[in-house]
Length: 232
Image 1 (cartoon, rainbow, N blue to C red):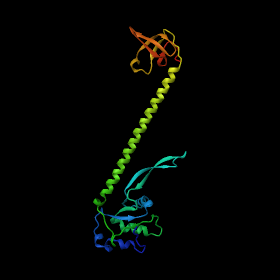
Image 2 (cartoon, helix red, strand yellow):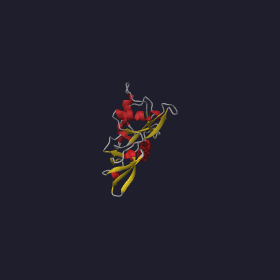
Image 3 (cartoon, one colour):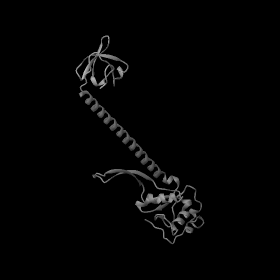
Image 4 (cartoon, rainbow, N blue to C red):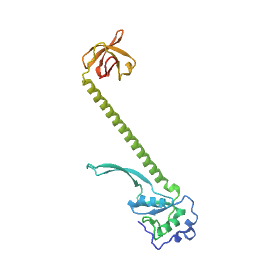
């Protein structure tokens, strides 16, 4: 990584003291800062917090901590797409250098990138590909989260169905003797929601219910709500 000598001062980077290509800097020209790979995002965040316009493309990854242990857990973490590179608004470069040089500066270490003795400037079009890559990575992450949400919802539905099947299986095992002649309603069967019938026979697990006329059906005893006796 190319380093800037500490003897270089902010004045060396002022527009009227810079090379000719630095004197008329369009507002959206960018210069490059360099730092250690693990510090890329930290440097960008520190400079942003200090009021500078900087950017480094990032993506979100998922890491598994303590894999295979009882404390295993997953976390999401932002990582740089282009480690060691940070793009700074060129017009702010002298102020950035001045902030770096302060004796009490809390900024993490970084350098100002030079090539062939000059500070290269990039137009917005020069970083468009990186911005597109960052957006694509963000879209992939959103799609992954949506897919995970759908999978979780599917698992929840499957668990709810399993729980409901187990509940009904348990209810079917219950012995519930309903005396002949008892007037009953039917629950959890929407087609019979407003109907009442009379029990004509019962074996404890199911009962024959006459709803009037020729309509008589065998219904699980647990579905019946008795009006003439306590519902047990």
